[in-house]
Image (cartoon, rainbow, N blue to C red; front, side):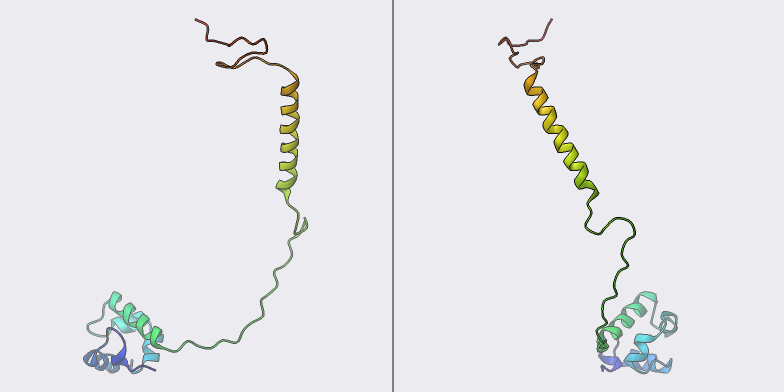
Length: 126
């Protein structure tokens, strides 16, 4: 574990001031409330937060035992693999296909710039 003066932003003089206020170790500094650090002369809220974060970073990470993942509760109603949109997309595709087939059977009006079924080019009337 790092000594107080080895933490970024804390020199020997600052370490002494922190120790006078009961913050004698890196662990105590890392667990300290911001108000307790701000009470030390020379510390404002920004510097106190920065020094506390640096103290936390210098501590070794606690080793946690691997926990088995909790199972998520199954959703009520429809089955997991059901896709509502799949049926909608199938109906839309079928409707598009039937609409294209209908258009192919009936010669409709030609749009501007296209040739009609009779072979004449449709132009804008004046």
